[in-house]
Amino acid sequence: MNPQVSGSPLWRGGSRSLCTFILLSMLLGGCATKSYVVLLPSPDGSVGEVVIKGEKGEQVLNQAGQAGSLDGRALKIEERQIKEDFGATIAALPKIPVRYLLYFSAGTTLTPQSESLIPKIISEAKTRPAVDISVIGHTDTVFTDPYNMQLALKRAGRVSELLTEKGLKANSMVIESHGKRNLLIPTPDNTWEPRNRRVEVSVR
Image (tube, rainbow, N blue to C red; front, top):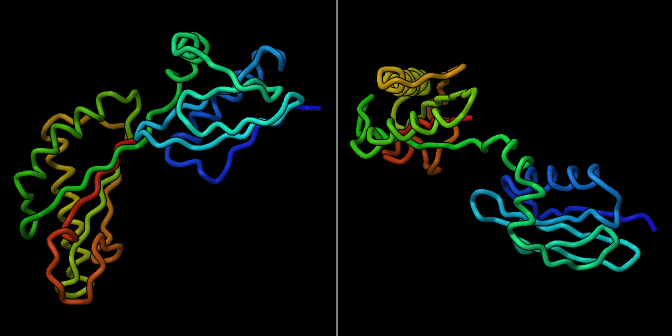
């Protein structure tokens, strides 16, 4: 019987990518009797699920650190061994994107708490070898569509200026306006909602 390894729809966030890389590295690295699969959590702590079917049975891996051989047997693999076998693969994985929400008290004035995030965004960007930034401006539903599109663009522009002034180095920076589309908090028209007055910064 040929061994089978499959993932369930429970994959979430970065765990699918991480597990897929590990499966490939072991499947390509040796024969089925010496290869194994181990389930690791995504950076946010969530864990997916892997089902291994082979001539020795079936194993469902759904907890971080669980492992199984490709012939369907359960295995207990020490953390030291996992690092030795998969350290290079894990280190080579791209970092997952990080998103920041910056809020405005009015117009293009950031709240003090949101302005304090600027150094954190720059620090995160410095951890990536080739960083791409997207800056998307939003408004609440007060005023007209054309007005809000312009206001959201000004907000995104203001944040991009602050990032650049504080020393951000990026391969590319995309600035967009969504106006009052894509509300964080759904509201009717002409509703004052501070959480919708925001800029979303994604670091990739």
